[in-house]
Length: 168
Image (cartoon, rainbow, N blue to C red; front, side):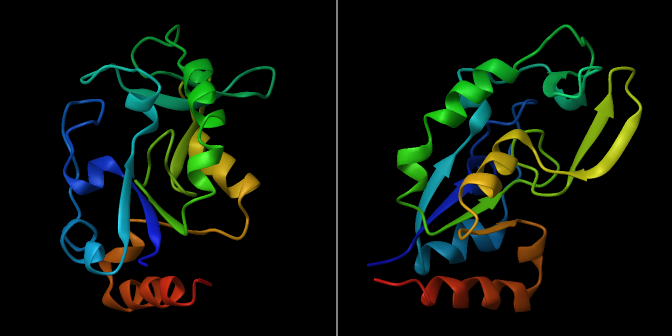
């Protein structure tokens, strides 16, 4: 039985990004299915947000809480709908062996999402998106990476070796 790998759907060529585009990654889309069962996901569309939709970013509020708010309209706050979707993912996550996230995404960025203050000033360039951070905290043993790592052949081989070590 092949290991199950969750993959940000935009990396598979699905046009689900905020701007209606995708960011297909050739190795993930074309080669990884030879070694793993691919389980596409998109937190934003899973939470019911439209395509296209206003761009959002991570914002640390005055209260210290992290929110996902509109880039052009800071009154747009999709944090609650994303958190609701995230909480519903536990059963699916328990059936995955690894996840490949889309870098820099406010939901999927794995240590690569920018975090801003309420005035739009960059606070941190290497934060994790809402979903990626939740997965990191609740599934510490799961193999996680983003597509940037998988640009290099040696990391592709390392990722596949992790999958091969999966207990049956």
